[in-house]
Image (cartoon, rainbow, N blue to C red):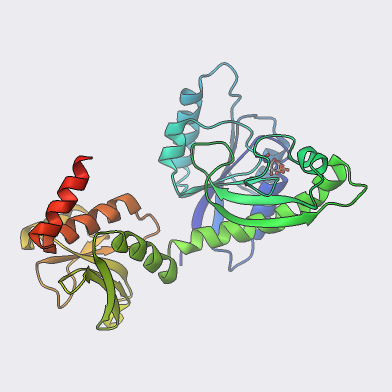
Length: 316
Ligand code: GAR
């Protein structure tokens, strides 16, 4: 399977970037680095990446407004064909627009056990608080600084005579182990059947009176004692696809969708014109759109009274 294309953004030494880079040399690593970018063209980490034959890009952000600078970074990431972004000591607050463009595709490493000690001076705060453990966290990037769902953490014991420097050094060892492993799991999960099934289940079951049963070996979702509105298929009849089947208006819509994006949409065997298959294993699934497909499919089969309730809820 093709490796996921990752860009790394740094501001300084780039030791975490180096850890990601060396881990990517393993044949079974599910990602490769396609660009290392920085808001400081003299960041030492850029030299490490260059020496390893990775494309680099650096530009001083001073004097530019945040949106304009982030738009330039975004253009570089896209030109490099990046699918994911790993922030590794990138000490710049990102514009909301940039964060939105990379929603669920950008992660960050932070030297504390989040939610403790966001921002700077994390080790000092942990020592002063008398904590038994410092550590590091990798999290998905959302608009707030050092917020967003935590994917993985490593606690690092604080010794009685630790200084900020001695603790920081051990946390760095932990970071270099944690980040490559977490990035690998993060890029792989978008292709993992268990993860994809769980995401579909969460969205489908949030709809009113939804329930789940197994039909023809597939998890499927319907309205309690009513019709089905979605099927999750995994290698159905050996077709090699992981996909969601939802109801549509008919053959015309089906043909239109397939023409629009024939890699993503398909006519599901044995289901006829009233359904469309949406591939979930392409690595770039828009989960808001999947939520909307499920909602529309639910509405198509919901009894009038129940569908009316959804309409009322929508108005608020
Ligand atoms: C790392 O310790 C990372 O956790 C931290 O910057 C350091 C970068 O070191 N990041 C943050 O504090 C983000 N809030 P590196 O350049 O050697 O990888």
